Structures are given as structure tokens and as C-alpha cells.
Length: 153
Image (cartoon, rainbow, N blue to C red; front, top):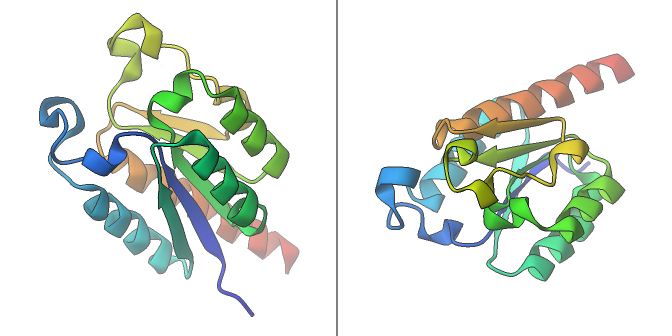
């Protein structure tokens, strides 16, 4: 039997974490963030499949391939979170528990960042808590999976 897993999606420019605007996004790298999520998931017996891309279609292809079988989806869509109805529709179609993460508080930044188009298809959003937001999102998804699995027994 295959080990249950979380899908973790990182959108555009997140490959530059630790270098890009450390005053806004902090000094942790993408590898640090992935390690953090893996440590949480491992505590629940879950694996992690992660994908970073600056290209919307690559993320959608990955979600369509791995999302339907996932215990949950953690997504930091980056700027795609403000306008990608294609990613929104993909998440709606997959219909897995999903948490959206934004490292910075997008509601305290430029007005074009205030709208998040994934909100109605995710179970929750974590914004403005730095990379710790990934920990909270992973915990929420893992607990949801554990509770759902317990109800099936």
C-alpha cells in the first residue's frame, strides 16, 4: 500500500526564498520550508510531494496528476493567488482538503494583492505569519487526514 501524502505547491518566485526581499519573506530558503513541512507530515506518517514552478500550467499539471490521491494540498500560489482562476478551478475539480499559505500579510500590502481568488475552494488560508504559516497549514491538513481516517475505521 502506498504511503499517504500531502501535495505542496509553491508558485512563482518562491524558488528565490531567502534571497528575494528578506525583509518581506524572511531568510529561510525553499528547501528550509519543504523540510519544515516534511517534519510535520512525517509525524503523522505522511509523505510530501512538492512542486515549485514559475509557470501556471506546470502547477496545474502536477495538481491534476497527484492531487486526486492526496491526503491534502498545501499551496502557496504566490502571485497566482490573486488572479489564477485556472488554479482555482483545478483545486475545485480535485476537491481535496486544501490550505492556502502566503508568507507576508497580503492585506497590508499593495491593493492588487488584497484579492485572493482561491478562498472559496480552500478550507483555510494562512497569511502574514512568515514561513511558520507552512507549519500551521501542514498541521491542519495532517490533523484533518488523521480525523477523516479515524472515522473510516
